[in-house]
Length: 321
Length: 283
Image 1 (cartoon, rainbow over the protein chains, first blue to last red):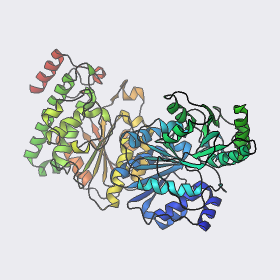
Image 2: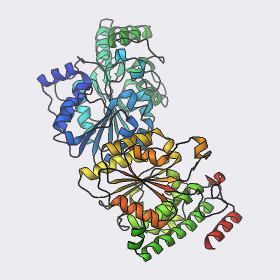
Image 3: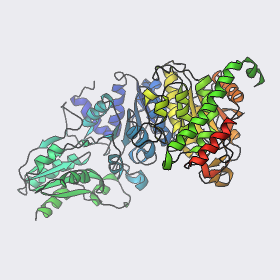
Image 4: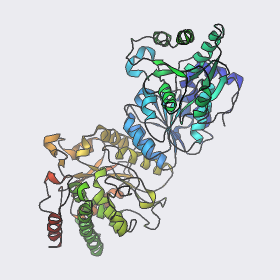
């Protein structure tokens, strides 16, 4: 449904994941039957203004009432609609978490919860707006698929996949405008199938969302230090693609990288799987330490938490001793 | 109200009243058979007449096809009212008498609080309070979008109205002008820890719903004629407003030692109590 071509992917990258989501919904509007898009008074910042104008009958602003938004989404989904319920990731997965758990988890209603501006994307808005625990909360709810696209092209692929998948999905969007490009052309995206972007012989870096780009850059830096790193894009955190972890166990070190609390996210998911195995390599969990942040812009926050490519590379060098 | 009482066929009233009596007995039997697990008796008994009128006289249903697309939708937002819900589903033949006997069996489908089961007429899972009205708003919006003329009935408790999410949903129901949505408030004036006005005084509940944009009706919640009349008026309402029916009920209605006695909010019945309760109902 969504065509991936050069010019568009560059525009998407400029818009960032949030803006791309809005642009992609505009394209899906004409294709997905019984589509509904809900916002909690954030349609402009979600890039949904054009969708709202083009498909006013498929759009509902619920107001600043996230619990009600997820409830209404559940009711619409029960009656056969494919419902995208959108708000900032932290509100989606905290204020309305019980509705998410009961309606999407317990009843498996066909709601796509879109967590906008997760991680540190909200910069100066501060800790109330950061999405640092959403993966942890959503992972603990049975039945919900958890997607975390690496760049704007993958936002398009994941959004399309979520629309076509019958069942509840959480779509986690990270990063800010001028989102670095990883994919420049169309590729095969399948829910639950991780993508190995780079082959290396020494270690494996498993990353998700915004951190996939940083992991690729880190791997390039590690080449200069004679460390050969594979990079895996774990775009689906649940169900977790354990086959790539099995493969990674043949290497010296497994590194997970995420713009999320080191508790309960991708790193936890990988280590939970590994605990069932013998003779596995050590794992380094790189993410946001379990603390609230001093507020700053996106780059500052990445830097403060050791999540830039050079910091990731340095950490890996140190870990390997 | 009087007009409807005249219009309403006496036989229909008798049918609903007798259905309610039967449901109340079944509710006691189910609670007794649940043994030490106990059951939410007070709340189940306070909604019996509301449920009997909805399922026995108001809602458009096809018991042979519980998933009929044009059926009226019912949502038990106060999920602990299952004694009133399952007994009504049994009366109309959507669940069988044998199935009713499986209430609260380990691993069974008739749990203490509803588990979504479309083949058995259970529209949504509920239990955690304050979630049902938002679902109802979504279902009502879907009906209107699809040009379907079903009505959506949501039963909420008065204690449940402590939950802020109820009022978020109420605001949106009137904002979206959902005149296919009818909320019935089981106003028994008690909740988990005792009298509602002591736990959290909600003031004038009817004026609250009215101020949230609802057309509001108040009825005697154990009088089937009044409930029927109000629901008929509500379903005939196409004035662009959702309707709230405040049903003045008695927690534990029908069993003297349970009425207005919060010890029966959730409790188990001994054989002697069960027999005493049944005896009162057959008097």
